[in-house]
Length: 470
Image (cartoon, rainbow, N blue to C red; front, top):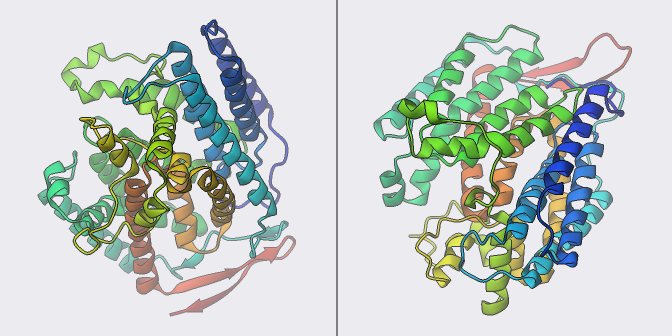
């Protein structure tokens, strides 16, 4: 993820071609949908969300940012997929009867969120902004030398964690019995250990890139370990988690790509074709591989239930009342065990589906719905404002000189779709475990090799000044 001295401000020819092709693809697919029984207001608000989201994606100057990921989520999960569901009359969960009034209210909430998001993003100015025209080395609080001892320590800790995962049955699958019978703390520790090889891959990659050195052989071991733990065909791990893990790694390659359209293209292909196609492996093994085919996703599927969960959450809140932000507090304090905090809420989707006496309660609850559940329409407005500030602040981590921040940026990008889809409690809990795993890897690097703070230099100077500590 090398910082460029001059950020590309104009789209390349490749970007123009890709965006035109994607635009025609979505336009032609939508053209053949049946709008005969559709409400004009619902369709109009859907297209406002979709067109604005597509324009924000295309006009973004950053290849990868939380801001861009938000609008990719909005385009796929809050426009394209739910529009297809609406036109087909699909009710994914059938816990309530969904009418045009529900769709209008949900679209209104999304548009209110976007409006406040844009206002706060425009007004917020990060205190520490890297000056344009300077070159920053990717070394940030990093070992002065990524020594053999540092590499050996990372590998040793990683092997211990991998052994624990093997013993507890958390390689190639999730040990669901362990998770059900364990406290939150145990689950957090398991998730930390499961993500640790990804953390080691990150810090090793960044160190090699910073010093323009060949990648160490240990990276091959970490890659193999990641494939083993996050095996795409095991059928037990959530595909949103699987996609998230691999997107964090892909972010390393795409972060400063000259062609900003390629990352968006990869996500479109992933969600429109690959994502649902790999649902095949939940019910089949490799002996049935001959039956596997890539087809366009049918969005009338619970994998794309985020929009309808927004409707269901709004209906529940209007009937029962707001929770006064207890869901947000529970997510922030997700690491506190229920044995200590007896009043800790369940995930929002579970609360709502328990109310409707549904058999299946492990459901999503999107980012916008959580704010509505907390404070109603006021919550949506506050949530948009908070997100505008928070996302812009996190986007400054991309070129930070701090190893932890820069790695965390990649993780949050990779898991942004998972977090935005919700529910908030499990996604925040899982992401916190990943952040702690990254922090542990960074602390090991610092403790075993000292660290180096790199001072940016302006163009035309020979090199950067460094200060070293032990």
